[in-house]
Length: 441
Image 1 (tube, rainbow, N blue to C red):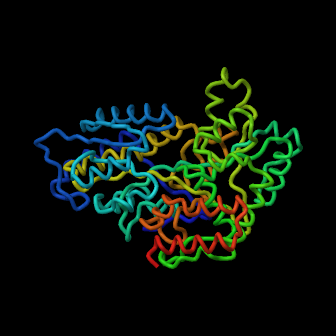
Image 2 (cartoon, helix red, strand yellow):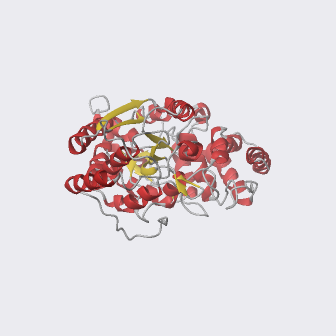
């Protein structure tokens, strides 16, 4: 399967209408007894067809409402009984583990980040379904997050992106423009911190904001964890040392020192409280004041966003892909595939994009032109976020080893140590040793 490269602009993916979907799935249902799906067993039509779908409970409540609505419409269109279960993201890994180990549970599970790699043995082969729905248009990082040894262990559906939210009124007060490079961001941050309005960034052991800051900074200076073979650790490089040296200066000159211990909510509170001037975050930080003007009068009108700054090696963003995976144990694999088709078809996913208000992006480039990006200038920049996507473990795969390194916060801790003033060469050498332990070198 081909993978879409970031600099390719041709967009050819077409979606099915609801009417066409019903016609197509009716034909598929009639033929499935003769043509087994995904190498599994055809559904038992003596029993009512049903699908149990498990996903996280979104930070955007309207998104969960839309999923329920689409499930109800799916049942009306196909006669397949749908159960949608939504739980806290922090509980998802345990549920997936229990399902795989017991051989029972939901038929379709929403996988986060590199979970298709971690649970590959419990997931079906989705190659044909991905080819049918996405063709060769997937962003490379989206395909890589779900592809294990050449087999797609899920259908990538969307990405949770990030950008730097900043206070336009603070920037205007001091004659500042949104930065394009890290050096420009350093000088902007220096002015802001000198006026008691620092940049807010966590370097703590927190799931979201710390790695989405540290990894792209590393990549933009040319550092990376491993070589393309996915085994040779190369973190102790000049690019890494340059990134760490920049971090040390940037933290001292531009950042709120309290960020060292922040979690993923701390920067939101500081930004919404007006004590910091900018922070890397998802679009949700903007929609809190936009959707609650009584509590935050006028604040949303003074917020805009810019992409991660560019370094000597380019501009990058840490992506947060989600994929829908059919479980090996499921007796309802064909019905589960029909539900994934329904979720991915153009009109349904378009509405899902709309209700998310810019919090998510698509996994093919056609969604960069979705109408949601024109609905509010403050979120328009999120449309291009996926172009710069990379995942943990680059230039190797986002596999179990790179996932372990991420869970141990090795890259984050490297930048935290640099921010505290440690020598970049010593920090890079420490990171090399830690990663070699993870990769079994």
